[in-house]
Amino acid sequence: MTDPLAGTQPEFGGMPARLYSCTPTRLMTWLECPRRYRMSYLDRPPPRKGPPWAHNSFGASVHNALAGWWRLPRPARTVAAAGSLLAQGWIGDGYAGTAQSEEQLARASRMVEAYAARLDPAAEPLGVERTVGLRTSAIVLSGRIDRLDERQAPGGGSELAVVDYKTGRRPLTGEDARTSMPLALYALAAARVLRRPCHRVELHHLPTGQVLGCDHTEQGLARQLSRAEDVAAECAAADGKFSAGAPAGQRDEVFPPRPGPGCGWCDFRAHCPEGVAASAARRPWDGLDTGDDLAGGR
Ligand code: SF4
Image 1 (cartoon, rainbow, N blue to C red):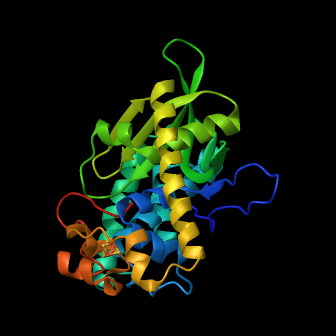
Image 2: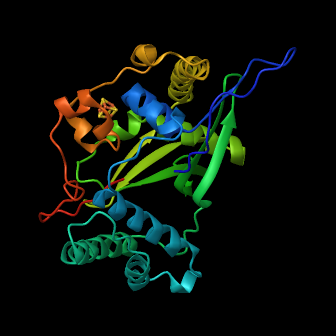
């Protein structure tokens, strides 16, 4: 998902209250770890990140191949084409070596081709990697949806569905789709841009072929938007303190670390003593699934 350099807009006398510009990723980064948020979005120059993760390369390669597949002319959307696109755009960063990269390419090919075999090439999506946005009285939100479908609604007519591809090795459940704030925000933004209701969100877990879906109610979507606005207000307040030049000693009060075992995967772990103490170091390829099940990042 794209992430414009977002933040608060300047406030001028007599103008409406400032809006906070953000992406769902930015809000989730704040929720997961305010220190990582600071290092990702505010520190300039930004701290040097660790080396690229192979599972991220894997996930990005799969996403790019599926996006490219839908951009092909309809007759060219074959199963073999999905594998070819993957091979052409394969990102080899982060792997232990050429042999591991090739092995994972073969696994990803099987996964992408199996997924493509279940797609209807004629079911033209309304959008692929489509940027959508919405504006409320508090936030300006933008994000990019992997795929936006138009489906037949059970009661007749059609409905929009937000599709998010997942390639990680962790099994997913319907609860993941239901509780995902980013997915709910994408649904709201898609509805806003296309001027049609959108309640359906789906996680397509490519390693298992599972589709984990949720049909949100209006109330459920409104709750997620309200939650996003609350998070954005926290971010805006913290950004303001940062801009005002909070002394280094007070930075951790505004941007506290949230150390835990997951810190092993943090791009900024090397700059974070608490994260180092809380987690084991990970090699760039440790997030890959190298067993019989297929794996990857996003
Ligand atoms: S290592 Fe952990 S605590 Fe430190 S910045 Fe990263 S996520 Fe936050």
